[in-house]
Image (tube, rainbow, N blue to C red; front, side, top):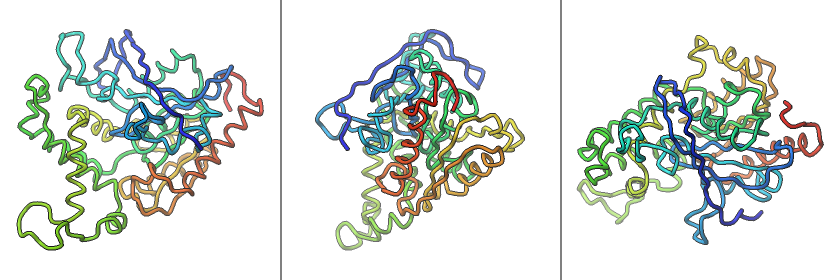
Length: 385
């Protein structure tokens, strides 16, 4: 297996207004994306990778020889990797409202000539999927071989299967959920409150004040990071280890876990936008496709046509295996073809980003079988599997 190597982002401008679920609309917006591999002649080998909360379009490869610019799922996507770019044409798209290139709160609102700030419209998972479909249209991709994502990206993949059932042959949902639990919504709200109550937030217009609500972002990230790790993983990495070997009898950093969380919070506050954090966590909270079907997930997934791969991790208490079981059962109730793997891994929610070989082999085998549909000539451009 080798790296894709040095890659470069691309961008596409859209003048046509995009209606949003909130009733608002956004116009004159740009989506930033990256592609890896080669699109085949009948455009049947394209895979869309949807990103999670603090990730972006930069899925794989690097921007320079510096390994620090490596894409967030580089272990998954590339030549000879589970999602093999020798076979597939992979697309990563940065979602609207992000702070990594696509139009978001930091950009200029064409209606006012000023930065959107807190006035950027609230967006949902379904809004992102609609914008991704427009990008696919412009790229001439009528149907994806697969739409794939982990965590919040998995929600987008699931939404694709519902909103555009004929436009994907496979749906790959990893470490995800059909809706957040009350506990998850509570964590998100506490994180948002940390940002909203930071004096440097200035009602979302902190750009004009030349400041960043760093304290709020730090606390939000620290809280979020706790939910991404399992108790076992924290115990193995940090235990109750003390930085100096003894208690300091103050309110500074005594334990290694405190040092780690503060490091993560400090780093996050230097590159992530506070308004983006608010928007993306709200999109997480609002996702509930069964809401329009009386909470009946089986009815919700009745329109789907794709084949599915779902993967969960035993120690992921944020998006637990039980949430994947719900999706599997609803799909089975609809006689869909479903592959499910539950990986016994100690790493918590973050396991979907790591190199557990059982997990990687499941994904590798699934995409290898999916490619047989293309390579074996059983597909025609635009036809369903």
